[in-house]
Length: 251
Image (tube, rainbow, N blue to C red; front, side, top):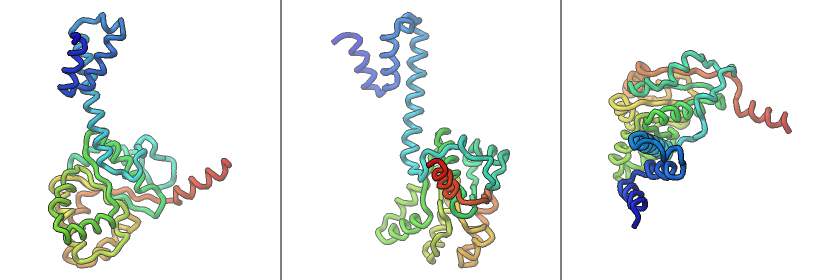
């Protein structure tokens, strides 16, 4: 076995995939091969760090299961008349509110881009190596119900707690049972202690208390959410309608 082959096998055994790929570049690039050993090592280690960082982001993105994975903050349409204050939005894009375990409530009629903006912010969080999980609110309530029945509730709660940012999309699209209310309270309580939350909904915040129903639990849930939440209140026509019109105009 040649020394070169041995080096590559050792790098693979050590799981230094980025460094192995970088070394191949060095060997086939005369200018790079002529660099000093220190410069070569600097290049190899830098490439390895970049590889590991990108791999971690890819894993975070896969785990997030975003509804709109291609959404990104750079493409948010500030010109659309949807009530988006650009300076306020910029203050959310840095994601510091996520590291502080704060919440974000995005309200507005159907089609104005609530889920898209939530996913765009989630993608930015992933780029900052923050773990994210997207959930449809109604389906999550169903998952919790099933977990009660089959004994997997502790495992599901533990899974949810591992994500720094949890997105609850389409909040208040289905009525809550007594069990749902208690599960929701416990979920929000856990978020207050260790994570952040994005809620998207068509229902104005002023009607949440009525939606939750049971006054004592509604008070507890509202208190934990409202006092730590940023808000984006979107307006205007459905972006789906606008997109459909643009497509038809181009045909």
